[in-house]
Image (cartoon, rainbow, N blue to C red; front, side, top):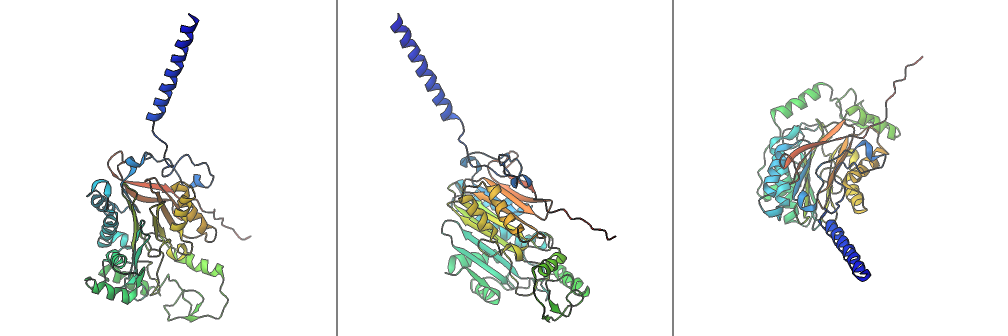
Length: 399
């Protein structure tokens, strides 16, 4: 009797262990923290992150397209192209190029494509980039003149040259050789912007430490023989009031189910910029960066400041070091904040599994578009992130 009882107890224990193992094997596996993760406990992250309901397995999050700002039409087209093959395989480059090209045609916010952001001479020039996360190859153009299809020209640099970037008139000549048509990028609207600016003594502008005084004159300018200081530099930039309506970029990332990644950007730069100026958008690691082993990131904002810190590269490397995407995006933003208190910018980071996050500064909140299988009300949706709060400004009243 005692032998039979011991045998029964042993069988019960084995059955209990088997049920426990079965329960563990059927429960969902944990993934990397998804965008705006509420699991973050760092004080810095609490300013910029919020709970996101799209966490899940790789199969639930990929393929995906994500881009800066609420440029819906660009995202919808990119998603449609990505879905032309099962899981988006071999379509990530097409999705990014065609999605950004859509924004160029629509002149998104007048900050992408032709007819926006005239420089001091009244001309619109374009910057664009495409990066392949599998090969780490990049194609880019900067200061592109008289050619509307900037990101498609960048693709030709990627696919038909051993170079990374072509600039200015030489980039336009390359585009002509590749079959792109030359045409004016000036529109009646951009001409009116320029005429109004010149009528107001070219205010605001990007000059400082020159004479005649750039605050009251259109120049031409010559250097002033005075010391350069960071304080003067920051003050001059502050007075220009960089913002999304006079300086913006579409940055887009596409990932397929095998974690193949492409990232791209397109912009017409800063309004009333000095001719020849190039911002962060076409610079690898600044405007965008992609690496199949880790993920990708894109940035938008005050390119003259942001390009000095390569925030997209910082975000990807932070993910490589183990940070979730939202915290990785914030790494790039906070690095800039250490040196510049009055800039506007945002970074989106996505890991290779499709988890994503964003961080921003200089705005109340930052909108971006996402398409993926994880959408509760359809694949395409707009999301927003609250931006990191800046230092409080105290008005001192003289006694």
